[in-house]
Length: 73
Image (cartoon, rainbow, N blue to C red; front, top):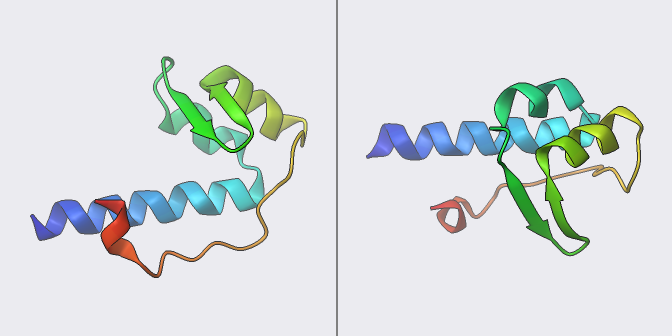
């Protein structure tokens, strides 16, 4: 179980780093085509997220902290 938790933490950190960098290529490779995200700004699918990052649409993250890793499981 420990390996799975560590893998999830590493993937979460990579995803947040990609958000900070507006790395569309990461999400193009990382997400399945049917992926859907829900956040304070609404609902977004993979194609829309990648497009937003490619064109720098939206508010990029500047800093992320994964201090409370228990909330990831």
